[in-house]
Length: 332
Ligand code: NAD
Ligand code: WQD
Image (cartoon, rainbow, N blue to C red; front, top):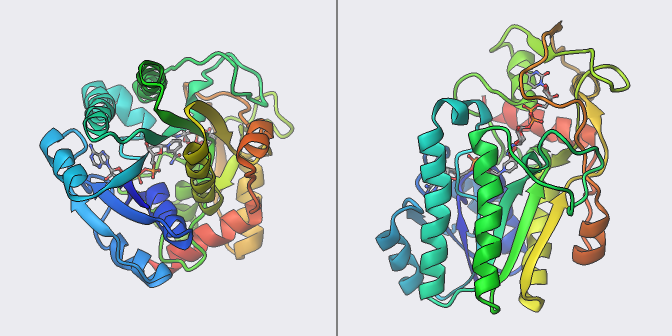
């Protein structure tokens, strides 16, 4: 079964492509390489023996998408393609709205034209906003506090409306919590360009000496050690969640909204301590001011994912730290 994976050379997309091959699907990747490299395709081949079919194209380019759909009988789409840096989205809202919103609209239009009715969408725990209390359940009200979050919030609404108008559609809105870790081979992972914004990439840069010191953004939150608590999830577990969602869509129509998290909260210091212990490296850190827009605690309710998808995360924080560092060490 041919599955179009938009953003398939990216961090979560590449791990999902591996799982698709392992599960007997035929992934076809479209990515404009704005935040990834074509060399990822060879790494995927090294892991699972298949060099995926690849189109270097923008999902905003309707003609290019039409070509892909006309050349391949695509049964379902997993839509990862998008820009994802919260801070950058505040500075460049036009780019974010245009890429994320327009890209999804063009994709849906072309899917409709070619009678492709199944889509798995990368949403985010960011849609729970600032006013809910963890554990987050899927029916809680959603909102956004920055342009990136707004695009996820709006894309969820757009996809629901599109599905409402077409009873043949099956849509999975997957709300990821904090993906970290890497493929155990050390071939796939994430090492962003420039100074990282997210915790795990920053920790890795400090551990390998490229950055001097991690600033812990606040230790006066109402959490066990005062630092922010998040639900970190191994990217391979997350990728497997997409296979479960795809199988669910094969049997069900309508819209499924579901959290992909572990249900466990870890503080910034928990992550730093686990990383140091598991990898035997030092992560210099100091306590700094809170980061504007951060909340104290964010973790998922995982009941719905277990019940509806039969999926749950298996890998723990130690394994996430080990695999993330292994990727960095092997790719320095
Ligand atoms: P990523 O940047 O590694 O992957 C996204 C991929 O999409 C990249 O390869 C990029 O080149 C490609 N892309 C971007 N715009 C495109 C366009 N217009 N046309 C074609 N390709 C395009 O990011 P990721 O971490 O793998 O995230 C994948 C998805 O999951 C994104 O939609 C992101 O918003 C969402 N998400 C990520 C996180 C996270 O923390 N990583 C959390 C929640 C949701
Ligand atoms: C985690 C914790 C920080 C960096 C973001 C997006 C969210 C989703 C996942 C896409 C927080 C602390 C961080 C640092 C620190 N992405 N921290 N020092 O903010 O939970 O979520 O990525 O959808 O939408 O907002 O992740 O990794 O930035 O932060 O102390 O240098 O680490 O304050 O408590 P966040 P993060």
